[in-house]
Structure formats: C-alpha cells, structure tokens
Image 1 (spheres, each protein chain N blue to C red):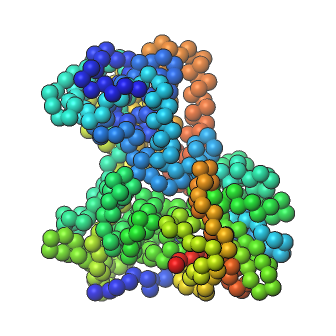
Image 2: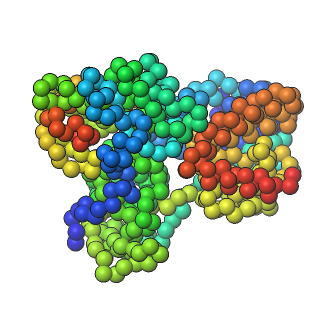
Image 3: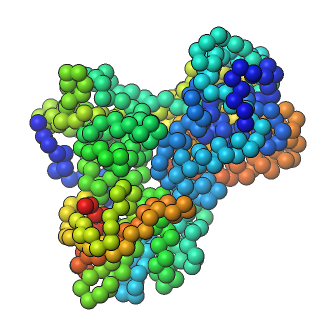
Length: 171
Length: 371
C-alpha cells in the first residue's frame, strides 16, 4: 500500500507554472520592476473570461480590455501595492511582493482561504508552487476576508533568495 | 415571495421547474415586467447548486465576478423575496403535457395538476457516474454530493479523499475538501492533461495535493465502506498499464466525471433533442430565445447544455424576458434591447479556449433548430 502519491513529475500539465513561462506573461514583473517597493505579481496564464482585477484596481494599473479573455497586463509603475486585486481574483493567482523589505528579506502577500488564519509574528512553513517546504517565514500581517475582497491575505517575511519561489505556507 | 404549498394558484402565467441559478434568474426577470411566476423545486430550499459553491466566480462585474456562489445565491433570494414570485418547495414535477398541464406533488403526497401559459424547464444537470469494481461501496460519491455535504450540511464526507477527474468541479471540490479539513491524497485524470482551469490546479498543487494525469481508478476495496483504491497508469489511448498499478488508503472517493443535462421531463414531452457531447449529452433543441420545439415551453441553464452557473443565470434571464414578451408584457423593441444585452454577456462567458467549444456547440444547436 502506498502512503503518498506525490512522486509523479507532471508539473506543466497540472498547473505548476515555471518562472520561464511566467516571464512571458504580461502580469509578471521582471527584476527591475521589483526594486521599487510592494507590487502585485499576477500569475495568470490562461484565456479565461475574467476581469475583476481590472475593475477593482484604483490606479488603472491592470488592463484586460477587450476581449475579456486577454491576460491582465500590469503596469508596474502605476501599481501602489494596495492588495485589492489579490483579494478579488477568483483564481487566487495574484500575489504581492516587496523584494527589498530589508537587506536580506522579502515580503510576500499570499491569498489564504483556510481557517484558522495565522497570527502576527507566528513562524510558518513557507511552501513553493508544488507545496514543497522551502524555508521558515514570519507572519507580518493578516488581513481578514472582506465582503468585497473576499479572500484572506497573509503577508510573510522570507529570505530574499526565495521571493520568486515561495507561494504558499502552512502551520 | 410566498410559499405556495397548499394554496397553489391554478392558473399561472409562467411556471418554472427548478429554483437553481437559471430558474431563479428567469423568475426575477419575468416578474420585473409583471409576469405572474410560480417556481417549483423538489428540494427543501431554493438556490440549487449556488449554495454549494463557496468559491469566487469568474467573469466580469456584470457577472458578479469575484463574488462567491452562495453570496450570489443570497442576493438572488433577496431579490426574489421583494418580488411577487411564488416558490413552492418540496415539490416534485412528474410530467408536463403539451397543453402545458404540469403534474406534481408536494412532499410526495397527492398528485395535483396545474395549468400554465408558459413553462420554463430549468432542472439543471446530473453528475455522470463512472463504473469500476467496488464502485457501489459507501464512501464513493459524486464530487457534487461531497460538496453539498460539506458546504450546505456541514458534514465532512471523509478524512482521506481521492478525487477522480480534473475538470473544474474536481479541482474546486478537492480544494474545498482541503479547506474543510480533509486530507486529499490525490486527484486523478485518465487524460494526459488536466481539463479544468490552471489556476484551480495551481491552488491545490501549492497546497501539496498531487495531481496524477494519465492515471485512473481500477478498483475500490473495503468491507463496510471504502478503505482503499487501486490506481493504475494508462497509456495515451487510455489503456491500463498493469505493471504500474498501486493501492492507496482512502475513505472517500469522489467522482467528478462531468455533468449531463437532467432532461427526463423533456424526453417525456417528446421534445426535439440533439446529442452534443461538449454540452454533456442529449440537449433539448432551442432557438436563441430559449424556446423549445414545443410552443411556449422554454429551457435554460445546464439542462439546455451543461456550462456553468454564470451562463445559466444569463440564459435564465433570457428565458424570463422571452416569456414576458410571449405573454404580452414586453414589446418587441424592449425585448430586443434586453436580449442583446444578455447575448453580449453570454458571448463574453463563451470566449477563450474553454468557452469556444461551448459557443460552437450552441451554434450547432441553433442551426439544427427549425422553429
């Protein structure tokens, strides 16, 4: 009897996006976009008819346009890091990153829809896009789900080298 | 809104069968223009599958994107309460006659008839089963059933779940099982690629739930209920590769193999039907006003071709205004204006690589329509 079913490599067919692929999408920042504080990072790679990120952005930084199946284009210089798009995205595929939170740490906001929510200062286990453990992280901020921005958001502090790797956590 | 059990009116302008997203949207829309609407539903609460859906909907603002299914359901019920729509729950419809007599019973008691001027059948979809050795063991159920247990009745259907199928239902319910505290040991698909949205798959992959494509279930084992599953790898022609077989412990197996239109009332009415695989099976042929081959009888939602709740709501609105026009509450011009707005929103939902096939299938249906 097998205990776990996790040793089968099929990432590209099962929704795990590679950095190379993400760099070809118009919502994913390149290195220089990430130098100036907190910005949204959109990991949307499919022509789904969907545009609430565009409607909710107070700075008109996100453009989906017509047709509604376009991938969202993020104008990183207009993004204020307000987190509104993270809370509304039905695909939970928008994160926000402040790469230079301090000298050696980055801050990443992750949409989080499990209860209980973690508490500030808690040490959590940061996970990558496949749910593998990457490093420990410290919870900086917990935003409860709101009526209109329907997912909880959790900001965690991680070592800088993992800012493009960590996309989930558990505790 | 009044619960019409017992005191049901005998003459109704529009009788809607099914109080799900399509039926309720139609009711709201038709009532807006003065149509007297009665909605019949066999469940003890209205809303259909909207109340099992705890995830946020896609689409645009006009489709309530970013809002969760049950929240959309609550809004719809609020609107219905403010209207003159009557809903009769626990009401099973057994048959409809071409003269628009509806035969039903409330709480399975005495069979009654009522006469309608227009009828909308919005009975939704049924989960398709897949069969394998041991498939009747307790603990094996449709993914939708597991979703209803968790999200409506707050009962966890199992502790260690195996999901069969990677369409959106399979992916979403896997995520919701994990949210509810169930360990999801894996999601299988016989095809070499997931069939649902990548974003839904990404969500469960980063929660450490494995997805095994080119794998299928061969057997479920257990004494009183399911205790384990035998899984096998398949080749590109979906043939089992016996050397790649293994057994895994689980107490819940969910089947998410797609939905089919719940079309029995249509068959009994001898409606013109067409088999369209992309839309889930046999679908009542309908024109672009959701009118079927039988005069004054309309269809909408998954029954008219399995899609999703957002499209079901738009089709419901379309059927609602079509009936309002049919009954003389809307002029041709008003109707055409409303209709073009709805068609625009429907077209949006059928864009992209997922929607295009459904769009084409709906076109085929329209082309085969000679009324």
